[in-house]
Image 1: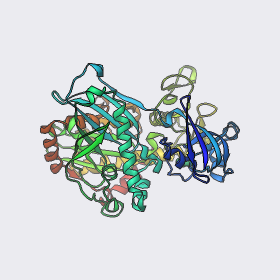
Image 2: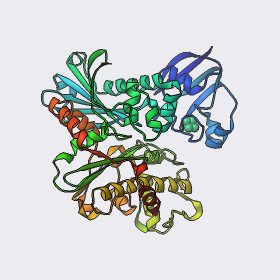
Image 3: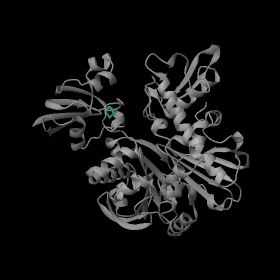
Length: 497
Ligand code: FES
């Protein structure tokens, strides 16, 4: 055995690790997870950690993903390096640090129960929302990374892992992510005694992995969930055992998170045509013509979360969130939290692509002049990044077009267009409209709504809302995009910038 010392935010933890064990697996076994967006294939470079000690020699993926400077400093890829003897790893803060995405008005210590916790179990982020059950008010939210990302950033790699016998591990990681998110709500011992109920929403894959259901039917045509009915179960969390509500799925990959969005955004009560998109790692599109609601899930891919982008990163401290042309032609950019930029977030990526498109440096077919554009000496946009943006935006836009067509609507008919989700809520409306990510409507009709899935999940902690959502789910039409003859043509047409 080897001694593995882990340093997180200046604190040291020591564990035993098997010699020959993959560094990422040893970290996970010790309870520290490092994201593996490419599922450990060595192609994304996002699992880099600072390490000293006896490790396996550098393999090709590390040589291509790490710069000479990285290697000199001692960075290695946790998904490639193996432990050969004692080693000390310093984890980057973003690998373990959580990001609060919602904050209520009242301090938590002033609240009294009974309480419920609504969870939005996202592919990338898991958010917990604290709800007082007597008035159904959502007071606070706390988000953490989904620990399942050690099996890859996308749902496909996680389903494949589950299919190949790793289902129990994925379930454990989902439950551990919920626990971590709930801990961040800061409930006291006394308040925990008043915690009565939890509710979890998520896309169909997250739902199945959380419940330990087989994912086989989601992996092959016609991509149907094993079980989509609502459930009432028990959940052990924060040292308590409480009621757990699972709302129904809508079909295919469209899960209860979309149902929660429909509920929160008030789709059932809209008399006029309205559309929305919940944009995160996946994109769920919703359209109503005033009498029928149609939904579809589109494989937008994780580009909007900064994954598969050369200098991409999640929207967090140090991420460039917007790029504009300033006075005198100088490039201006906004950095989340100020300070030096460390990478491009999804919204930064979109605004940079839109800026270069407007200035003619990216043409309609997506060709980037010179193949690369640098915004600092370390942060750049590559031709491959532009292609990722094109694919993601074409997938979302084509889904909108299919749903509008199915409901006999034109973009101009839409009374309202709502953008939500971890990426949707951060996006610049001009960029979304000008790049054609969403149908062309007047800017005044576009609204950004944060955390719709979490807010809808919070609403469903009330009995009437849970029952109403179950009825609503039965009336929603789920459109299978793979079966729509026009989808691929629309996708290709909307690859244009
Ligand atoms: S390079 Fe290690 S997870 Fe992608």
